[in-house]
Length: 163
Image (cartoon, rainbow, N blue to C red; front, side):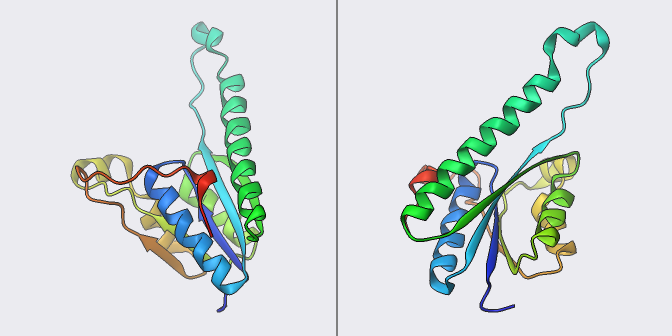
């Protein structure tokens, strides 16, 4: 298991996940591991037929296409810096279970994931993807805490991550 050969970095394009990606890149460079960059698009509930003009299917396709494009750009930048990366884009009602499925399918050795720092009713209402991944993953999980709400952090573009 260690040193890891494949490190998964779930990315939702938020600042905390971009920070976790930096750590995953550092670890991949240190161990000569490959990165698996993953984004899961939550399924959009189907709208009543009266609202069919919204074309939710097309919207979901655009979300998937945009996520794939962003991950491909990030993987290309990492490749230029000598870090091998592959991408996975999924769609599911339960993001954490899809992350776990992808990790199992790819035989991931380590998951590097961030929290979003939600507490109180936000956490109760929205749950915690990270918490579920930690509880159910069959491989080690490194959890990076988000900055407490109200503290400013430097914005990070995932494509600009240096090794």
